[in-house]
Length: 327
Image 1 (spheres, rainbow, N blue to C red):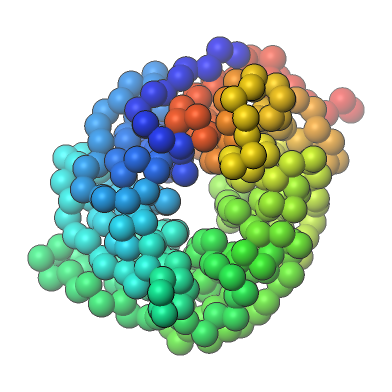
Image 2: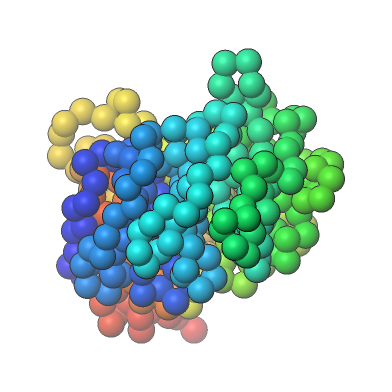
């Protein structure tokens, strides 16, 4: 399995995102400029120029027409995917940490970090049909969220029934998307939750954490079903759309990494069986902690982005695709 190295960023990666069909791969980094790639060949299609701070997150609409990016310049920007034009900029109260389209693409949820005397907050914005009619005001602001420390992400639950937030305190909280009322609090991790991703049908979610574990959750009840244990912080995890596999990416904290070989810092992507919680494979290659990892929607490849500024695109060998639990 030879990876394709995508070198389009001058600083460390923060997020990679496939579109729904999987032909496009978006990458965000701390260098202000999100990139767009063909996921099959690794050819770069273009960049989205306009942010003046690290881009922490992005999301793409259902039909791959619009892109949202959240950045440390305290803005969320809306882009035309095809032309690269910036359509609108939503100012935030602090560095924007997370962004996600709702089901149906009529709304999006975003998170702003604490900034001077303004607390960390979750925002919901309505997207106008016509960009010229777009309002920069949120339709909902949640400041009374109860997270100790920062909010690391906000996500829509299936059918937009609730907004899920993950925190630096290891908790997952659910809020009413209309009123902003706190519905549920679940203590999932003992360390900061770094990332959360759903499976294809949004019935399962996987969280990654600095407490060296990733956990599989039942979306309906938010109960922990499985725990995948490692010996280092987990920055990102993903669920395979075709197999009972999960992949974890992480490594020691970037601040404590020395310039030694990739073996020492343990920067591999680690594959676990989803049900049996057994690790069955590792993929080396990055020269720094993996910050973001994602499966292609068809399950035949995956991509990882790391502190070294590279995105590595891995197309699985046929023997992986034939791999099955021994009966």
